[in-house]
Structures are given as structure tokens and as C-alpha cells.
Image (tube, rainbow, N blue to C red):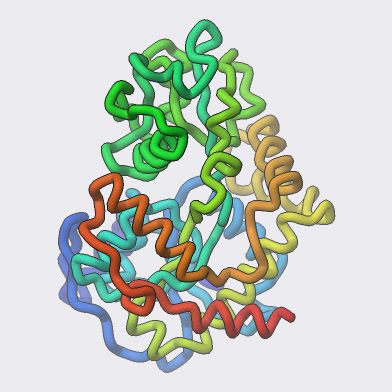
Length: 338
């Protein structure tokens, strides 16, 4: 397993292929077949992804399933998708990027191939003297990150399913997931949608239980995996092996036996280890079991995501399942694991 984690290297390779990337544009897909069957797996360089990468390295699942992987880390929410659409990478296995369907609708040569974390690991935090229920958020300022980003879209869907008028809530962009939490902790917002990793924080915030996304939005897939059309055609067996390896990793993560390995990987991935945060994630993995060894998604799963994006305004129309998704690798990987 090899690593390529710098933006400079990413852009250098893009230039070598004659590709100019932009967050709003698409480049021609890379069509050359790798002679050594190497598969390029891209992710954001965030803590959760770094923890999974460290675990994968430590546990050796790539070797077990015969995967010759190059791990590429590209910053920014759109970075992994841009890398795949341009041909710099083949597949992203863990992504909270919620505009995948929008980019496919716009013509990106990419398909959703399965799921990462299936359950939404988010909840609503509020100031202790503020909102106690979701309805109380009306008239309040709620930090969610960029407009129509993941946090904003999920909040709109939550309000819709709870029959609460979202137009009466002032959604504000306070940056990343963690920055939204900090905004509430420092009084810059009344509430926020943020990660369950903050459940053990000592910031003094309260949790609005109705906003536990894994319960409130049970039909929502939190993280999708996606790959280029070229990889689906030219590296299909490699994709099957990658998905089998990740399925094994997810299965291990949800088992009590993973405790020491998870904490060790977290320490390797985080410069200043945050034990309460690690414990919150560990507890969530054990109690809620947000992953699945079978990474395949159904037409209903994809349909829900399409309806949510249409309702939020980021997607124009539904497309057939086969136009936006391909579960052939995920299904083959599930059979290999059984």
C-alpha cells in the first residue's frame, strides 16, 4: 500500500495528464488501464479517514484481499470527487460529500458503488439555556456549514420529516463540522448539527435527542462510495477486492475485539489525542452498528437520496438507478465474504 497525500503532488499529476481541475468543472476521464492492477483510493485527509487508513494499514486487509492500493488524500469537500472525475483516482470509499448525484446529473463519469457508514453519525447540539426540542429551533441561529452542503441538506430533510417549517430557522455557515460545534460553544450560534464525536465534550452543550440523525433519518445513507466509470469497466475485479477489504474492516470496527486497535489507530492519526472523542465514536460503533459488511445499496436507498436532494434544491430530477449507481462490485464482494 502506498500513499500520496499532498495537494502539490495531486496538482502535479493533474497537470501531467493535461487536466485542469475546478470545483465546478469536469475534466475528461482517464482511460488508460494500469498494467500492475494498482487501484487508486482517494479520501479527504480528515481525522476519521486517517483513522480508517491507519487501521487498514495495521490490520492488513488490503494484503488479505490482494489489493495493490495507492491511497491519495485530497483536501476540500469536492476534492475526492474531482480527482475521480478527472482520472487522478479510481474510487472513494468513504465520503460525506452530498453532491455526488448532482455531479453525476451534470455529466460526471462516475457511479455510486455502495456505502461507507450507512447511519448518520450526527446530532443536534444546543446552548444549555436554549432550544430543548427541534420545534424550538425556529427563530434561532443554527450552524450547519455551507448552503446545501451535507449538514444543511440533512437539517432540511430532518425538518421536513418532522413537519417543522425550516424557513423560520436561520441556517448559517460557520465552516466545518467541528467549527459549527465551536460556534455554539462560544456563543456565535444557538445550535448546530455536528458529529457524535462531540458527545463526550465538556463544552457544556446539550443534545436535542429528536435530532439524533441515525434515528430520525433511518432511511438516509450517510456516506456513499463512488468510482469512475472507467474503473468499473477496467478495474472491476480490483474494486471487488477493495470493497471486500473495507467490508471486513467495517465488520471488525463494530466488534468489541477492535477496541485496542481502534484507539491505537486514532492515536497515530491525531497529533493531540482526544480520548473523549475517540470513546464517543467507539461507543457509537458498538451500540448503533452504523456500518455493514455488505456495502451494497438498494434502489430505495438511492431513491431516498435523490428525493432529499431534489427537495433541498441541489438536484433537478430523478434518474434511473442504473444511470447513477452500479452495485456489481459490492454484490460480488458480499458474496466473497459470505
